[in-house]
Length: 404
Image (cartoon, rainbow, N blue to C red):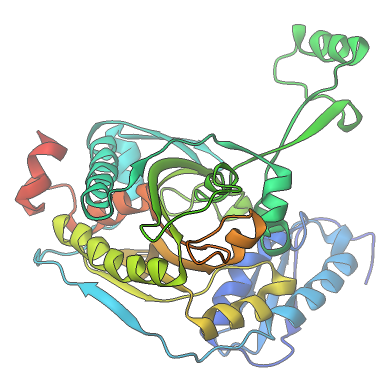
């Protein structure tokens, strides 16, 4: 192809094989990580071809090569596993779903969107967020005697490496850097910004990475605090509200998909039997939370969105072992069509973290762990989508606390 081409260009390519709609959706979503010069890949309705929407035609050959390699590994994903429903709730509100909720939040002044996946919120949005967290926290305390915890938003890269995050989700990691501890580098940075109209960032050679990251999964900071400990038959349960950061590139959109968000987390630690039992006991509590807010909801078998080159193998393992369930709540997409949104997950880790962090169960073997994370902002979006902005459509149990 002509390397001197400029502007945008669309290139159609054949997929390695016809894929099913689930894989096609993954291809579209994860395609933002193929190249900074690629806007996105879309897949044809028959799932046999794909279109590369290229931002800078000068890089067409390079992008086509990357896209072929990306599509070849994504097409290897296996699907068709039985989807099991572990629990569900049907709302009593018979009103229509509300369209354009994100836009209405902004119009009412309840949400300020900074762009790039960061938001500020107040009013009823804040009240629902606090209420979801409060009710979930109380349920965990009452039913599991969960210890109330608090963990930092930063996490050491060595901990993320030990947790296997860089192998599974390298695209979503965020590293923290600071200006080099060097007099000249600091002065150059100061002078550059002393009278500039906008921020002048330091050159890459003046940025020092000290091995810290923004935490991308709420449960991770808990495990180093348990290192070397042994738990008896009663096990251990801890719950907290965590601040989570996952780089989403161009996928960031409203409350649907944020770079920075809040998660009500609970972690179970103990024997295999203890963690399995707590998982079974926890699912009805999640259903109870959905019932409190009168939401359509299902808990079903699911897999994580792994990075392309490991997606096929890791998704197969998760699906085959049934170690992950998602809390799925229907909302509307930007075109007003109903879609399911993962508002949390129930995860079984086996003895992975017990082995990595030398945490021992009463049996003397590495402890098992499991966790449940509830994405607070997504629960807020789901509640307003299913009940709209008329307070009388909201369940009485929460109405006054949201709109009073």
